[in-house]
Image 1 (cartoon, rainbow, N blue to C red):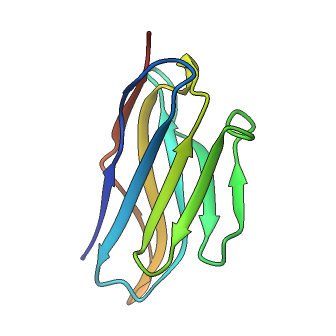
Image 2 (cartoon, rainbow, N blue to C red):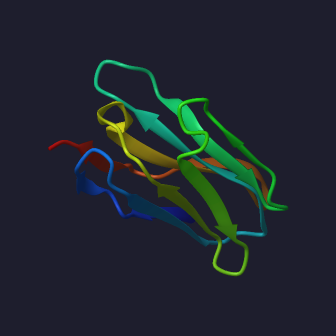
Image 3 (cartoon, rainbow, N blue to C red):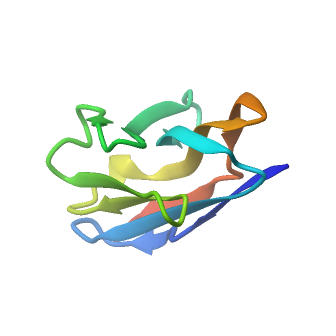
Length: 118
């Protein structure tokens, strides 16, 4: 059994910052990659940023230059530092993990709400 525990969401003013964390725990052999997705009301879930265990990262165009994803191998934890937040960054942020637990599996966290409002 594997769990993804997210934290760090909340209410922030436009221009502010938040740091999301997602810790993977349980029977994990290795992690291939982790990512953050955002789902805004009425929209499909879309990738914001991803990172491999070796540190290669990708960003959605909307996140480039403002968000930074990082991965702590020792803690099996992925972080998303979000700066200069805009109203359109609001939504539920989901953590995703592509990992090996006996065999290749994909897991999703339950999501953490990010609200950007003055």
